[in-house]
Length: 312
Image 1 (cartoon, rainbow, N blue to C red):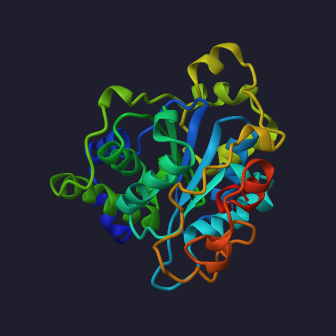
Image 2: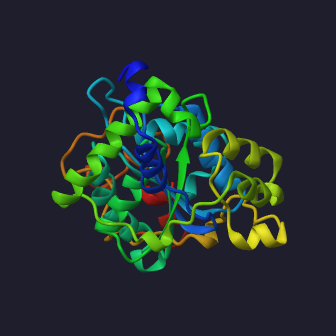
């Protein structure tokens, strides 16, 4: 869409997109940070994920995203390398490296979450993804995982405040293209209405007050990458207390190794290990890939933990 075409965007449309698509939610500590993969804004994504982890917003992180037409390196693996390099511990990260669209992100991830954590143990989820897609992440989660409380961190990598989207041709085109997908996708059953009662738009001043209790690094990262008018938890706005921090890695005793009989997270039985699979995640020792591993007797305790591909 050209800059000239911006004049055709009515104020009513801008208000509707802001209210219904570029949604804002409260942000409070959750059981899971669900990261929808990307090829764009990688630095901003890594900064936001690492800041949320360091400041106690999540106990587990799942990154979903597979290869794309122009890059065989799965989005999940690329982001995994980035956040590990930023200090996020390996043992809180789950990877789903096959999904090629937002629906698959959720559909392929749910069995992994069940096998590794147990869906019954996840009551709240923060969805993290591109700001141009915003509400569709929540609507996709609502379609396939309605039981959990959902929040949103929308990463803005466009280089200007997201409130200025109507004035920037590239951002405007991306947001309107995503906006136009919502109704057809809902009619096709890909997404579901996300409860309007959960939409709590707040002024930018409220968001800045809410960030007062966060560390400077987290505040800076979230200010750069999220919608500038997003909001933190109301309880933190009132108390200005810093959230609990995840300064240290979870110890071995805090994460039980799944039994060897539980489902493996590998893409498919008999499939070749992804060439870009991150080191240390057990792909080569996985029982689906390695006959030698399959032939080894079951282990218990620390020995099983060191062998289990899901605990590396």
